Amino acid sequence: MSDNPQKTNSSLRPELFDFHGISMTHYFTDNWEKIQNFQARPDDILIATYPRSGTTWVSHILDLLHFGQTFPERQTSIPIYDRVPFLELAFPLLDLGVDLAEKLPTSPRLIKSHLPIQFVPKSFLEQNCKIVYVARNAKDNVVSYFHFERMNVGDPEPGDWNSFLHRFMEGKMVFGSWYDHVNGFWKKKQTYPNLHYMFYEDMLKDTELEIDKLCSFLGLSPSEEERKLLRSELKFDQMKKNDMVNYSLLPPMDVKVSPFMRKGKVGDWKNHFTVAQNDEFDKDYKKKMMDPKLQFCTEA
Ligand code: A3P
Image (cartoon, rainbow, N blue to C red):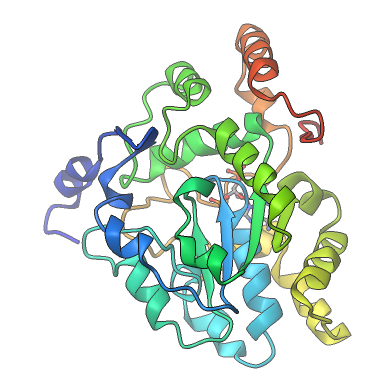
C-alpha cells in the first residue's frame, strides 16, 4: 500500500459525518451516484447486513450453495470480497465495489451491502431481487464492531470501549444506528416478500436448519455431497483459518490487532459490559426496540 505502512495506516482513518441523516464515512459515499444508479438484474442476490452480523458467514454459504460444485476452485483461489463484492466500498487502491459487482461473471451475482434500507439502490427493489438480511443481537454486535474498528484502519478510531458503546447507542456508527437498520429491514419484509430475514444466533444454534430455510427461499435443493461440503467449510474454526474468507489478505485490516473471525459466539458481550453499562443499555434498548415481534437472543 505504501513505503511507510504505519503512516498510511493512521492517515487512512476517516471521520464520521452526517449523510442524509445517517453517520457515514467518505469511503462509502464517495461513489454515491454510481452506487445509487447501480443496475441490478432480476437474479442478483443482495446480502444486506449491519456490520459484524455474520455477513461473511452468509456470503460464504451462498457462494458455496450456488457455485461450490460448479466452480470449486473459486473457494480456494478468490477471496470472499471479490466473489461477493461490497457494493458501496470506495477505498484507496482497492477496486470500487460497484465496479466489481458490475463485472461479476457469475449468475446469480452475489452482492454485499451494509446500507440501511432507505439507501439500497432502487433497482434491487424494482427488479424484485432476492435480499438475504442477517441480524445479530445488539450486545454482541457492538462488541464485535468495537474490535473490528480497532483492526480496520478503513474505519474511524474506535476510542475506548465505554465511549464506543455510547456512540453505538446514539447511532453514531458507520452505517448509522443498529436499531434503525434492523428495524428498517424488518419493516420492509412486511411489504417485500423477497426478503429473507435471518438471525446470527439461529445460525449458530442450528446451521443446517437455517441453511434449509435459506435454500427454500432461494429455490435450491443441495445434494448430500454439497451438504457435506457446507458442514465442513462453514465451521468457525475452518473459516478462521481459511485465508479466502478471514480477511487476512486485505490491506486496511490487521488481523494481528484483532482477528476478523474473532470468537464467533453468542454472549461474549458479558466479557465487555459492566453491570452499569448493561443496565443503561437495556433501558435505552427498550425505548428504541418497540416492535414485540422483533426479538433477539443474547444468551448462548
Ligand atoms: P465475532 O467478532 O463476535 O467473532 P461480519 O462478517 O458481518 O463482519 O461478521 C463478523 C462476525 O461473524 C465475527 O464475530 C465473526 O467471528 C463471526 N463469524 C464469521 N463466520 C462465523 C462462523 N462460521 N461461525 C460463527 N461466527 C462466525
